[in-house]
Figure: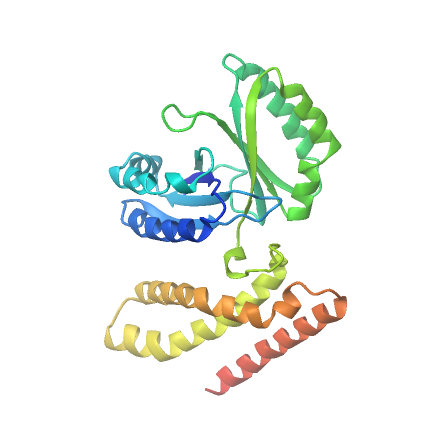
Length: 308
């Protein structure tokens, strides 16, 4: 959807309020879901030390729809109930999804920068220099910058996309970036960087706070998605939605997709706990064993479903 817009909200929650804030976000999601143009919301919880803030992405079909939510009485009422949970101010930014360098990516850094008045030209020239440098960093996948929007966001917003968290962290801590940051004292008041994980991370809680490799997450998602899609199609979609209800195939398929995602919210965390020994193993033998077990389960399901 070329005209879609994502609201990127970054906020820091006081210690002890994490559960209350998570519950507040879930209730807020139900409110924003009723707004015209709302598409989806995702939440990334803190993952110290690389990410200490909560990052909330709310996607809308148009910028008008996004602004309607930002300025709504419902949102202001919701915000009034969490001031005591927060440390400092929220950073709220609008990002046009059709442009290059925007989410999603395996991992991204969202950097908000407050530029000193009258120093915008100097800042843009510096951004061109750091953009050229980071484009040569290993794992770099994209970059973009958003100018301030009057009445909505006062900061400049930069989004860096990398293929892995390790490559992103290597760039953020690199001598080249450190040298470039030393040049900014004359035209930057302050800046904040937050790491955002996308994909299936929310389904894979880890005691270490570090997300498992993306390819392992994908293998477990397929392990749960395949039987859900097959069984729903055989037991519900074909006989009832297409047969008795007479729904058009695109409508029945949409219903099936919604049901599948809802079920995966429970099934993937369940299976990830059973494969915790494999998701972040201490030795290569466990990695190989886990791959073998999952491939065997794939094959077994194919055989069983073929016989049904």
